Image (cartoon, rainbow over all chains, first blue to last red; front, top):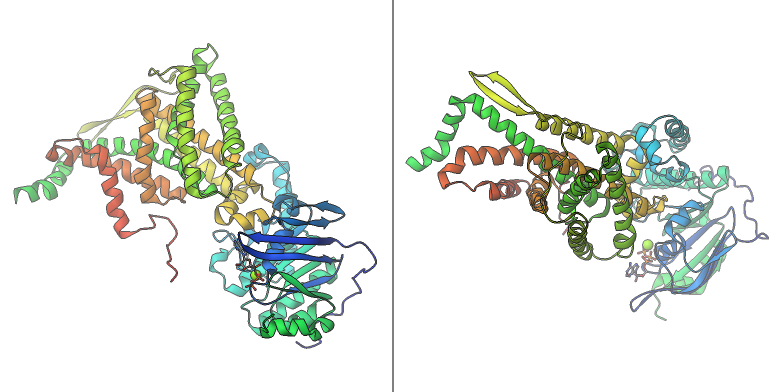
Length: 271
Length: 318
Ligand SMILES: Nc1ncnc2c1ncn2[C@@H]1O[C@H](COP(=O)(O)OP(=O)(O)OP(=O)(O)O)[C@@H](O)[C@H]1O
Ligand SMILES: [Mg+2]
């Protein structure tokens, strides 16, 4: 990636302040499988935090713990100063945690616009009866949220596919719509599970640019999983490395890259 | 040769030679089809939003109708009874969500299906306990529904239309259009479609599954009430009515379990096909054809389109 594509970022990372999110001693097992084993790490407000590791390391499980799909057997999750044993998906969403999925999870039968509007669910409060009438406050609420959604559509340059059912879109665009839906939630913490998987070089560069812009322009804190080391080096402020559910390294990208345990894990050296 | 003639030619000769009678048969089939479509619609709503095959849909029709008749019998005006019945159906939806769906969330589908069987027997017991087991008469006139008969002179004969049937068709159309508009143009409708498409993604944007479940069960309850009124007006209100739910199965096979247009078109095809079969082919085998013909239509159909009329293409991954 050339330097021109990567905007210069303001020093968003505030190392001194309390972290936005902190996990302490999280352990998650499925029957006999320990997907996550006593992992602690934090995400600071305003940073881009990468989570890397070989296949099956427990990265996706970690995101699932953060947004409440999985409930760890041990450990705590501290988000915005509140200590929890477990998150619930609804609480995570209503407290500003948005996410995308490793295997694109869009509402396939709906248009791009409706998918992104679904991201505004929690911003729209009018009750069932107003909705039935689709009148007055419910209508003005709809219009107001449409405006917010149109801004995101402009930002991600997907005007042309607004009315297309997302099932018909190519994979790269689906990933972008998924990002748009997450952004529509006005998140404080954005979790991205392999946002560039399966993309060609150009698409990857575009996606990198969007991610940096989101972080820089709106100050959104981002935690992302990514396999492409080049991308990780370019984007992230700090990197946490998992292997077989255990944290094996945590630090600045350059440090992590030189770490012997990390090199071994990626080369498959037995432990 | 005679048999082939009787099966393949004679019925059509009969149709053409008495078009007024054919029209009558088609209309009767259409009205039956509308009711099948409504029942299937109740199933589809719940299946789409939660993946549950709701065995209790048939008894919900009976329960709603019984509640309406029972409340009216207490001496309140029909419109008040109707409003209160809606309240009862709402309470039922909330109770089902709290007591059945929420504790069983993430259980295999078969467990939830069993739970709806349990719900069926609970509602039968509750209905019998509160309202008694004997058949009752629907309060058609008190509700302001027409009961007369219209005649239409055509093709040198007369076709009869029950006014209640016309009203049933009209109400069904209004309800289906209303549900369609609600699904397409409101936030909650969008949320419903989102849940139907992808549970996890829906949860991730903060859609509350609990709220959605209450809304679909309530909507299915309203559809059940409408079905109960219409069906009750044609026969009477009794627990025997719940077997009409069995008619929903072929409709669902035909229309696909997740398609609202499928439920409607499927319902009409089954209703009309069944009537035509009964009248024109039934005598050949001595009648009684009505009870199983719907399944035959559906199964033949299944051979050609396993995913149903409007169902999504089934793609096997290997
Ligand atoms: N729902 C589940 N049930 C059982 N086991 C699971 C479940 N989810 C994850 N696992 C197991 O947990 C381990 C970690 O999986 P996870 O998906 O978190 O890995 P990952 O680091 O995201 O891998 P990849 O790079 O392949 O996406 C794996 O052994 C996986 O099989
Ligand atoms: Mg993963």
